[in-house]
Length: 247
Image 1 (cartoon, rainbow, N blue to C red):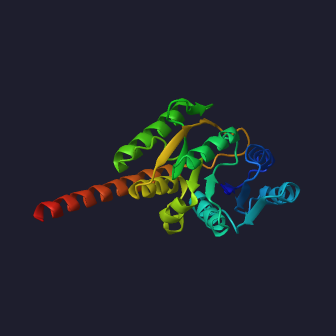
Image 2: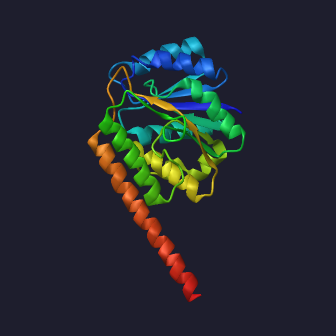
């Protein structure tokens, strides 16, 4: 399958070279799209140099930092415009293990519409996380699954593969959420469209270089949107039930 890897960057100069070489090693024929939000540390400049050296790398330079959801929306649009059959999303900061990439591709080739690199299936986990962060992530994903009626155990993992036709139907361009809520919104749409969503285990490793983009605002936004979507879905279910009874 013609495969694209879409990866947003912001101040990742210590990780970008490792990332591009590691992805190229595991998926030699994939095209890599680096979506750089005008990183002050020169990540985009380094990526341009590496793109010229490696080939098969496109660096998309944006005007400034606009959020994870905005960067992925832009990257997905670019990948779909180039008629790739499979689009993979992953972080540059070494938290997503490139050795898992062939497993993501294999899951799509086996019939999945979406495949999630999951911390919360057997064989998955986290490394170097403090207890409070592990509890917050696990609780947040469990709450998300229950609130939205999702069977996916890791709704906030950005390490994913999408069949291009599924991504078109999900239509990321019409989403508005940023941060982890954006990732949840895509999974919610996939599930509501009856798509096959598989999970493969990953061990998420906390970044060693650079600064985490996680913030309290992102967490609050995610939980607020999940709660709103859950209430909206429950109301729709109730309305359909009342309509059927009246009919």
